[in-house]
Amino acid sequence: MNMWISFFAMGLMFVSVITTIITKEKLTGILRYLLLTFSFICMMVAGIIIFLIVFAGPTAA
Image 1 (cartoon, rainbow, N blue to C red):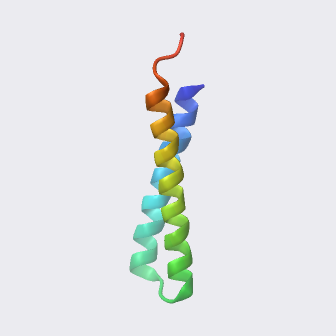
Image 2: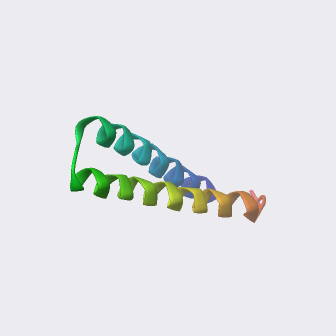
């Protein structure tokens, strides 16, 4: 189960990076700041998930 949760967190990181790249290159105005905020929230949630998974320790196989 921890593997799938960490995959979800890595997916959130990927979405965050792609959103940031597209937003910085293509958008302006309020939509740019809204998507950058969304990207930041995705990265923070992914970081918290990874932190919890790593410090939870090993699980029984």
